[in-house]
Amino acid sequence: MVTRLDPKLFDATSEITWCAGCGDFAILKALKLALADLSIEPHQALVVSGIGCGSKLPDYMTINGFMTIHGRPLPVATAAKLANPDLHVVVVNGDGDSYGIGGNHFVQSCRRNPNITQIVENNQIYGLTKGQYSPTSDKGFVTTTSPDGAIELAFNPMSVALAAGATFIARAFAGEPKHLAQLIGEGIQHRGYALIDVLQPCVTFNRINTYDWYRKRIYHLEEEAYDPTDREAAWQKAHEWEERIPLGVLYRTDELPTYEDQVPTLADGSPVSRIIELSRNPRPQQYESLKEGFL
Amino acid sequence: MDYTQLLAEVQEDGSFPGREEAEALVVSVLMAMAEVLPGPQLDALASQLPPEATVYLRRTRSQPDPLFDSHLFLGWVVSTLDATGARDKTVGGLDLTAAYSGEEAIRRMRCVFSALKRRLEPAQQRELVAVLPEEVGGWFLEA
Image (cartoon, rainbow over all chains, first blue to last red):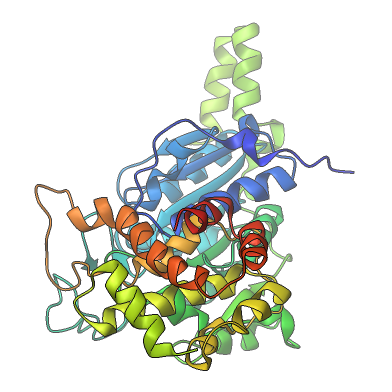
């Protein structure tokens, strides 16, 4: 039986600089709760982020944290997971960082299937830089950089993830932190890449997609006769927006191996454990052998 | 009970230039309360308000989210404040609206709470405070 930890174990003393009412507060709270519920201690997990309001999150937790350059948390997280597969690796970044600047890493992670969890704080705007339209801004969205309305179609992370081969695709709403925590927990437990796209109001710069806007549109797949292993049904759900927005696990499959499962050198143990062993009992030729395994 | 009177009280208390601003505030606070109050307290509150206001106390979920806290509550109110929108008001990277929106939202929320308290018996007020997120309950008491 798993002993549930106290979520306060993850509290930090850093001053939180998010705007009052920001949806990021709920994401932070839900992540702490999910880790505590799974009895994952701070030293057993790593949170990797990029650049943006939400990417400040690792600083607001007592946990291993790595804030990367803009758009690059996924490759850093994948490398950390390869170095130490025993670590629970969670990526937290915004829609711009994930789907815009880091868009290629997002697609490659979907098809590689590393055993990591990505939580995307999708507020459909660049908040830290004061309100420019982002990849997920709806067409016609007025911002400082789209004064006549965004002319591009919005990036659809659900359908892109499905097409690229992601093995766990879920969507949550920051206004429902308990449901969000449950989905984060499922994502962490999933063996493979898990995407949790969190619809998260930016209360300062996005005056369209507010808590009320989402509240009127969201519904829960768990409350319908929906089978998340049905890829075609997931494709349909992935395209629902505007009138009705589905929350929950859109798609999952446990039938594919993880990226780490297929890296031969990991069969001899994790690089971190082997380096620790070598530091206790130095054998230069073993360092070379370890390096060669990744070349 | 008169909805117009309720809005007038909030408008005067908050020194809002227009009735629309007061109404947007009342609506946002009521909707946030609908997210967090258990059924009996929600019904009790609705019974003391004019029908035009009670429509905002409808909740789509059968139970409130137990993790709904003061940050989320504030989010519903901050969304109604005048903000940058399509205009850039930043000063050297500091957005003044963002920096002070929390304090302003709490000030405005208290105006609505004050109007609600005039319509609730002390026992009902105590019941509400007991089920509101802790900080929000504090703001309600201070109103």
